[in-house]
Length: 107
Image 1: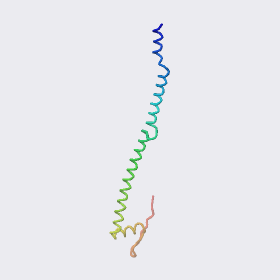
Image 2: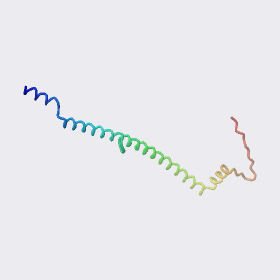
Image 3: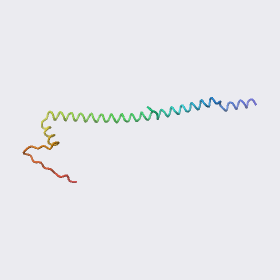
Image 4: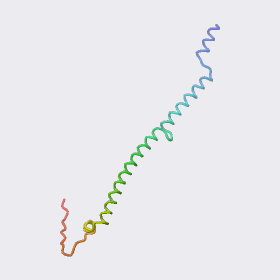
């Protein structure tokens, strides 16, 4: 009869151990959830990396565009033929002896 009592006690852990395991499981689940979904979690970091790469590409594109515009400005400041060409194209200017031919756009 003494052996049966000891066997029953070994099968059912005390309430404190059950409570401890329950708290441990809740803590681990909360830690995993925070790791993936919380602020500065894995998913947040992945979104930030993607945004960073997009911004780097945009910076590169704008830098190239800036260099092209600076080269165009320098060309217009130093080359009178380039300045004349730009004035003719953008402002529609012509010389007194020239004739303008305008074509209708056809589809």
